[in-house]
Image 1 (cartoon, rainbow, N blue to C red):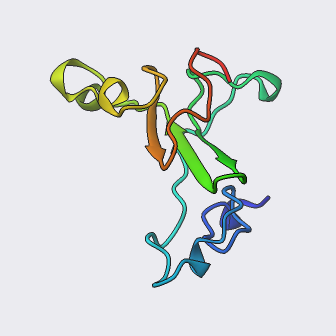
Image 2 (image 1 turned 135 degrees about the vertical axis):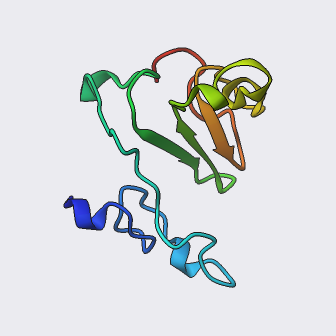
Image 3 (image 1 turned 180 degrees about the vertical axis):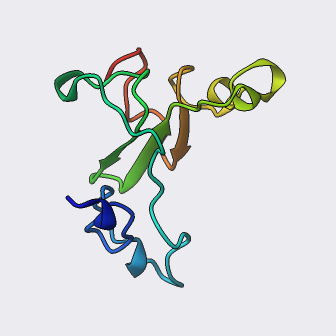
Length: 108
């Protein structure tokens, strides 16, 4: 996939979901990508890798998107979004409609 196509919302970006077909239009204009975007091992993605991750369940049409936040403002103290997001992994920030699809450890 080319860098130009990563952020598309029509299902051809890194997130293969057609956000452009949501009733009322897509809630976002483009799919975010991590500015660093590094993976130590594609065969074993871990929570320390700087990428977004997603998973979905077709049985009940739910999704989860996770990210490893890099800013101390969002990962320490009372502002720690990774531990207060109601997801099942305190090392990642989770969003979506089912925050328990992806793993709970440091790897996936």
